[in-house]
Image (cartoon, rainbow, N blue to C red; front, side, top):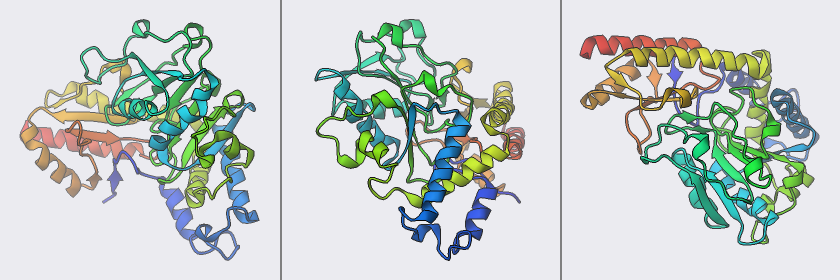
Length: 366
């Protein structure tokens, strides 16, 4: 029986990528070394790094005036690194605007408060993270250092299906987006953003790598308290080699980029993601046995939280799913219920198997 892993992160990787990594584990392309053993400054690893950077730039259409940085610390660390790099563009203490749409926005806000003045420009009126506040309701500052959004809330299942234009209201402030869980899942225009960042462990590769895509003019403004290894200028000037980067995670990410190109690129994978999400949401919407709370126009294609109307059945549902090799469907501890993460690497057969089980469980217990 095929195993389908619905984990939110670290998450499923393409089988082809895992097979290639296994084949190359002891000897990367005749080098006699595992990638884990290579010097990050050696010619072998530089080939891996340069290919990964080139392929990611191609996949996302990253303009020439943006730098791609391969960093460490995950998105949570980047929530501190970003204000340390961008707040210095304004007189201190700088103000930063946040749109609060879920659990990861809350974490971003909490971290940024250590380095700048935080203004929450919009948040759900009822305190429930089931929607994105209407754009007309946002109360942006007149001159913030940047405006921050989380483009996809992994825990709450809220996703932006539009790009907020903030520059006209904020003296040209750049838009900064945490795209940890939906980067490469849909076509975007990188030029709409000043900074895009995300941890790799959801839709790119294993934990340990953080991707930062930053416009050139936003580099070189680090606060004096910023550690050297997190100063974007030093990282960019040293081609992400200022300190030892997460070499193996970069290697796996590079294999994922190659796999994604073989699928037809981001435009093709977006259509596959639309089909997977529609299949699952259509069934949930037609069932009175399961409940979804996120408003339809804000639903995530990547992370689908849902609840059994009778939560006394939760344990039985998860046990039955495990028997059928449908793994890691338990919702985040902060919200409960269930969650199916259906990233790029989840085949539609996995979603079909999940829907079949949802139907079966409803027939038995409904």
